[in-house]
Length: 353
Image (cartoon, rainbow, N blue to C red; front, side, top):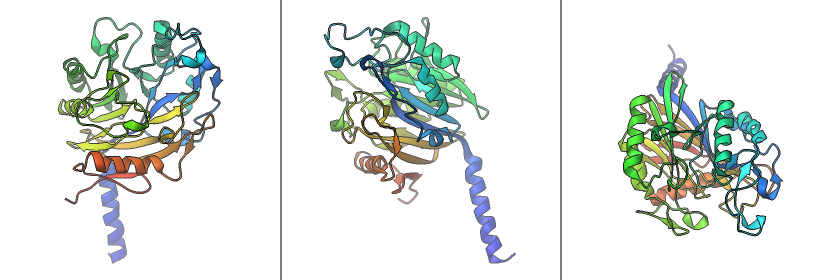
């Protein structure tokens, strides 16, 4: 066998080994809202330029930042005096078609806008998603007294996969607070016993351009405790969680590799159509592509940068601005993490000490 064939054989064995290890490929995006119904602002095919990228996975996740319902009157802001001063968000149920075309399989509803239009809207959101085969976590239609009813479970690639979703307050229907760590731990312990892989979603952290860094300890914004996110995420992995996907700050944040598991501290704004500010870095989003082995360990990843402009379609950012920002923040906030970022968004493990 000549040298050329030996080289090809070695490459084949290496590639085969890598792909044999891959048990699940997940794509994840942050906050998603395709209409601002209260203001009468509606997008059309807003995700068309990113649908192909989102679909190429075993499982695609998003955070639905508001209701998916046809309830007309919001439950909040009744005394605001003006629709322009009322930040109550929903998109009509017809936008389920956009989610399906983008290949979305699982979503978090554990955020501060899912009940903007009241319990009826939240129930319709849950039912609509379930009717079309998209699994929501974080709240349910009629959950009863069992906290575990907020967990979404799906069978894929011969694996049982759970999505557990948290927010920073439990003040509304069945949303479990990440600040109530003992209660959160109880749910995750049960999820790890019932499933092969467990994904944690959390809506936490301060909001806006001033909150790109992940601080040590608790962080506060608008007078509320937005979580000790380092403590929370590490505790979840210590209990057996395999991947953690954060959202809520509306800006990208760092990534960390902890005990072989990937933590994404904020996926940023992804598709937020309407009255949202698009001032950089609020306009920067990402599609995170993660490959896990059968034990949930991070193998490799890719960060596809996206960019929004006011009321125009979502675009792939050829300048890789979100990727560059995440790489910089990760180096600053988690200098001992072994994640390595390339200029075009590839994410790998640095094996050189």
